[in-house]
Length: 88
Image (tube, rainbow, N blue to C red; front, side, top):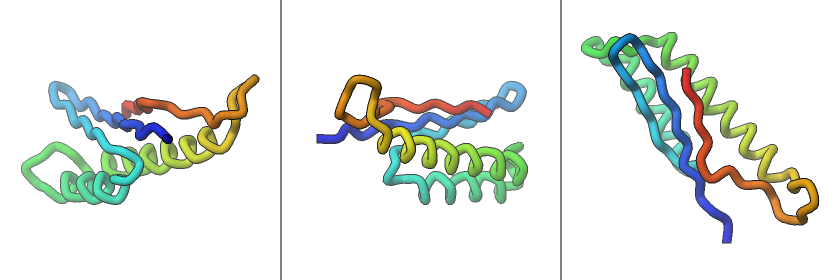
């Protein structure tokens, strides 16, 4: 049975921390949340921040797809990252 990984995406802005935890089935929801944060004038989260983090989400998704397809050295099993992290 395949393991479901948790993706961790973080943005550190001065004293503020924006941390997003999501699984591979929740990519659209995290992208929508990032957009809502950028649209909120009460947050310091900008559209630039949203663009950078959205790009990271898509890159993590592409990397995970490539990693899951490629077998590990000396193994017939696909490689799975249990937790993938990205910090902007």
